[in-house]
Image (cartoon, rainbow, N blue to C red):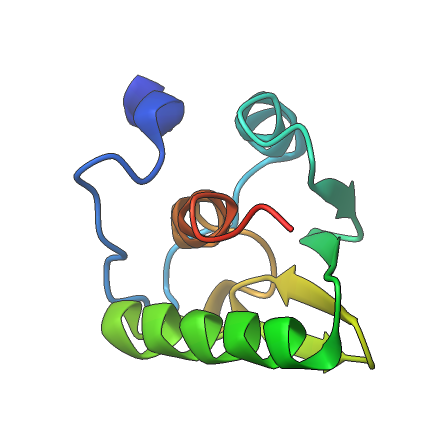
Length: 114
């Protein structure tokens, strides 16, 4: 991996991933995580939990995540509670993390500040 992930989502979009490419190495994952301090790395997945003031705001965020996911064609696992939303990214096609996961995570960080 090159230093291209430094800017994460700034002007970047997800690249189609159909497998056949390796997942990021642990070192690459840890380097990319430095750009996402609010996210957690575990088991070749990244996750973050948001807590909102009410259910309406949580669902509005879910809808915004759905828009990003559709636009980027990269879909996270979403766990939705009453006022909280947990987003989990990994790339199924490579059975691990790809640059797409970090690009989309950065996009979500820019969506909402509860």
